[in-house]
Structure formats: C-alpha cells, structure tokens
Image (cartoon, rainbow, N blue to C red):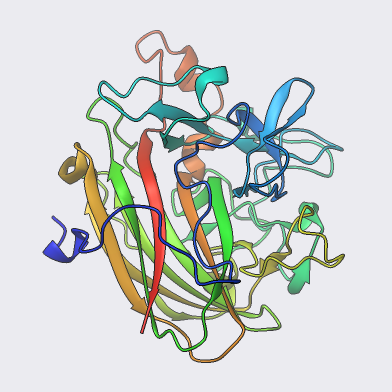
Length: 358
C-alpha cells in the first residue's frame, strides 16, 4: 500500500509558466503533432511545440513536439535508432488505443511498456552489441557517443564487469523513457511532480519490471547526479533498489540517462543533449506503489526539496525499467505452446506535471 501522500493536493491541469522561463512540461496531453511516435526513435532529439508538428523517417514517426526519447536499446549496427515502447490512449472510457493517425490534436494518455525479448538467444554482433552488461563502464563526464551508453540502467549488484551476464535478475534496462528539461525559477525551494496513473488489471507488470516518474539534476561537470523517483511495481516483487549516496558501480549503473540541461554542444535545441555517465549518485525513492492499488486512474504526486543555487535545471521523465533476464530469454518463451504470449506489462500516464514552489 502507498501512503495518503500519494494523492494529489494540486489540480491536475496545465501549469502556467513563469514568464520567459521554460519551467513547465509542454505537450503534456500528447495532443500536438501529426502522428504519435511508434517503434523507434533517434536518441534524445527534440522538436519545438511551435513549428513542425512531427518528424517521420522511412514512414515512421520518430518525434513529437517537446518530448525527448531516451533508450539504451539500439536496434541495429551502424544506426542510431533506439527502441521505443508506447501507445496513446483515448481520454475517455473505455480508453481504447488510438489509431496512429488519430493520436494527435485531442487529449491523450500514454501507455509505456518494455522491449520484451530483444536479446534474442543472448547474443549480439557489431559495435552496437546490446548484450554487454558493462557497456559504457569507465566513461565519465558528458559525451555524445551512443556506443558508450549504459545498457544496464538499474542494478542491485555491487559491481559489474565483462563477466556479468545479461541474464542476471539484478540488472534492468530502462528500455522506454520520455523526458523534458526544465529551468528552475530562482528562489524556488520545492518541487512537486505527478500525473494520473494506472496499471490495467489485464496488463500487469512482469514480476521484476517497474516504472513510473522521476526528476533529476546534475552538477556542472555532470559527475554527481540527484534522482527523486516514483516506482510502480508488481505486487509480487520483493527486490529493493539501492538508495541514498552511492559510489562505484552502484552509482555508475543506476539511473543512467541524459543530462537535465537542454543545452547541447552546438547550441542547437534540435540535437541531442548529452548522455551523462555520473560517478556519484544520490537516489531517493519518494513513493513505492503496488500495481493492484492503481487499477483505476489515481492522482499520484510527490514532493522534494530542490538543490540550492541559481541557473538551475531539472529533468523530468516517464520511464519503464525492464529486467534484463526477461530480455535475455530470446524467443524461447514466445515459442512455448503453453506460453504463447509474454507481455512486459504497461503503465498508463495522463497529464504529467511539474510544479515549483517557495
């Protein structure tokens, strides 16, 4: 059970901006664009709400206004496509999945889910080898080399090296992640974030999968990362993620992802922000929610104290963390006549928001 603090005390609607500051989530209702994104996306590219409505590549929509997509799961050698697991849902009951061409210009919820059995037969080839638990190990600061992104996004292990198998149940890949970068108004000391959320009773999470929302920031060198998160989990799950001040591999291989700064090397807002490979991490699990407690739409909200300072930035993300052992299984389970369909489970999210307060 989650505590009563999970119920929102704030109205769940679009928050007004502070003038001249990018401090609210844009396109939070997924109602801007020609088509909603499916299948794959370029790593962390951005598209402004004003201007182009969407971007397609080879007939597939690869971007929507405001939201950036992050995943360490590359789909092929010599390419920069990363896996993207999401669908849009109609706002009203019975919340049917929207048609690809009808998923814009109206209010939508999003459902995020995992990649399934992407490590087929537990092997990989080429320089984009996904089957490499310590990929990116030792890389530091900010860089734009996708080959060095960490495939392991979360772990309870104390160390990871070249002998760590991807079928380890103590490793997770953040296979789907949508995020935005915000400016924190000077003088604000607290942040509240949340959304309406649910896990459908017919699409429950596999036991070791989890997901939800989180906010994060880094210091200027991007070596020290602060993460505040909500975790929605299976009722059967018994693992505990490492929290508090972390160093070593527990810092490097937990909450890997993008910088909270929206400024890329070229100064062009349309190119990817930097991937951060931090060396120290402070992780705070603000709320743990069992899926059976949110089978209906539930207002979820948490609060944390911001780091002091000026010219601060904050990242906000909706994420799905998939256990690597599930992804490593290959097609074996899917070809089992007694188990013909293995779903990752999914998390429904409607109108996420971030609020800055005194």
